[in-house]
Length: 281
Image 1 (spheres, one colour):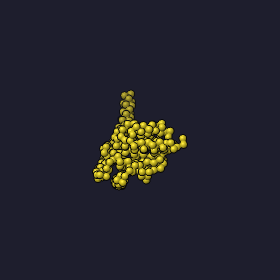
Image 2: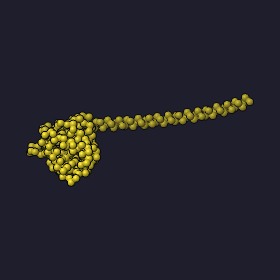
Image 3: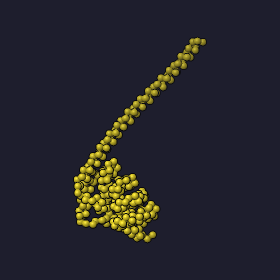
Image 4: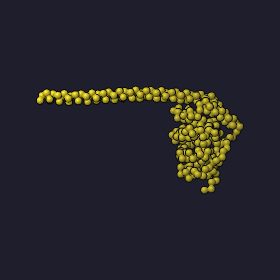
């Protein structure tokens, strides 16, 4: 009886030993797999860190280049608001004309400004210029917005700006920035883009009229109001968006800016009302 019991216990012990050994092997395999995964994740992390560092270095070099080009302009900009004024177009909705070319000296300034903008565009490239709109340096961000606004004054650049996400970036700036210069330049860029029918649809559907109206209600800067009024005036030229313009506060904002008494602002308000009134409805 004792011998049978001993054999039975031996068999049980053998089974337990085999099970334990199997579990140990299984755990060893899992540990090995986890170690391999850890090494793989670590390698990917190092690679990602390297890419982030490269992108940060590239961005810093772009920002430095923009600042260098900005300093090289010296007296080209004369007066920022006048220069930007000349680069933003207006029209009766679907047409186009010069926005405010008032003198030969201003035209010379605009030509010089366009040369500088073209140089930046060629050396830096549109995607990189748009990336600078998100810069943490306010001066770089302001200059990038001005570059985009001036590029948007040319029909050939508008489609590229929209395709590369420029419109979304501009609307985001209009919503989040507290800087008056950025508001002014951004509204000017949107005014230029609003000369295009397909862009009008994007601007309206992305809440552009509401954002423009919001800026109009917050600013007391006549030049910013002029840009906002110009953008709304261009949108007023398309009867399709009249209901949404009223709903989003665009028409109310346009009329509200009349109280500034500023001639250029009133001129844009009048143009917007003319666009609005010419539509049969």
